[in-house]
Image (cartoon, rainbow, N blue to C red; front, side, top):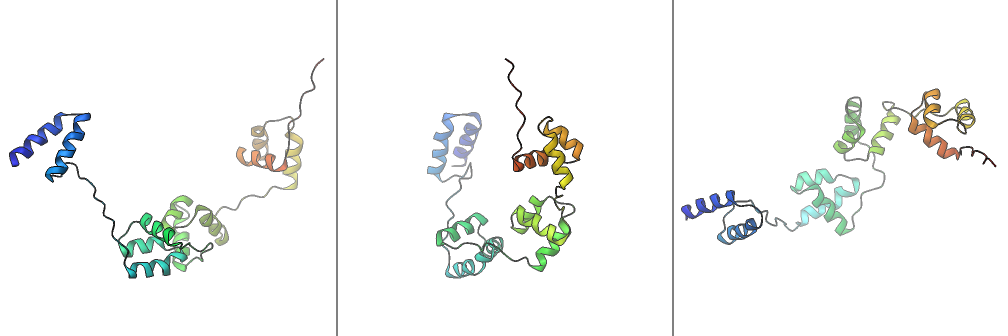
Amino acid sequence: MERLKSRITERWKSIKGKYCIFWLKFYRIQGMAKAEIKKNTWVAWSEDEIKLLKKLYPSGRAREIAKRTGRSLTGVRQKAYSMGIKPDKSRLWSSQEITLLKKMYPDNSPQDIANKLGRTVAAVVSKGCQLGIGKKPRLWSKRELNLLKKLYPNKMAKEIAEQLGRPVKATEFRIFKLGLKKRRLAAKN
């Protein structure tokens, strides 16, 4: 049997393409594991796991459930979905989460922090602003808005943004929100 395995292994290394399927089937028939074939490892949920899911999932603690049960995060979410269990819309921040947020905010992106805490990026940014550690969006002054309205018909958004000291995207968005339009040139007859 060992000799057969070594011959098959050598043959496996030398062939490409359509022959691989034949040899893969042969390995399955012989019970050999040349290429680790992932078997269906689905295990039914126990009553205790379901109780834990019902208790913790609404409060948004899917990661904790996954760790405790040894299941994947996706598996936990799928089971909750199939049972009709939904996370609460607004979940309160724990003191541990706030401490971690304060610690991570200066050096990490909001996306990284959101992944770590199991929250949305918007929730992380919003809480950062509430705590005074995030960047607050700069409001548009009346002077800036008047200047924008005056300059936009004749100048490009990029030029106006430079003059106002604002990002181009923010300037373009404000132009859109204000509904400003470019002047059309009169047709020459």
